[in-house]
Image (cartoon, rainbow, N blue to C red):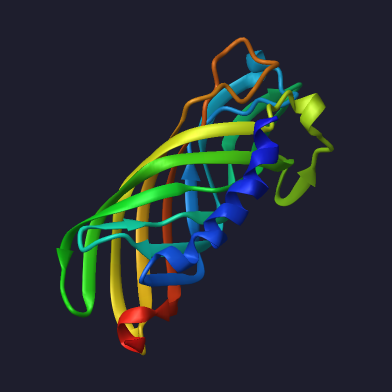
Length: 226
């Protein structure tokens, strides 16, 4: 039942916009380095090596100034996380990229450590509910490293639980560039709290590092209006 609460949470975030004197909304994108083990339908005995997967991060950040020291910064994001596995199949070495695409709603706050007229720097932290919306797998064979082979896989076969929850901590810096628009740079580390793979005997949680850049625009600013 938890995933169905996400639309309600998003609606609540938009309804709270008038409560804040300064509100921003925008777009951002970047890369995501994830360290996890999604075996999917791969035999663990055949796995010879595991590595990090580099995926995409695309989000719509929002920012609400609560006071001079604290901002509420929720977000809606789509993120690809997973793992790279080297697998020995018969006499062929394969390198699998196994990924899960998540719809995430990071519920974050920012403590401002430094605030100037056109510049801001702070620590961000919070919780990140996530819902898996897609699962993908492909591999490169040692005999042909230029051609990827897609593997048909679904959530049931992969044994992936659809809901995940993580803690997030990172750094945020902003710079006003023109007419209230801000350039935003984020670095965040996410630590998953739930086991996301039901088929495996191992406890597999997500662990990822996000590096993103974006632009946010003021929705309204009562201080300027007054």
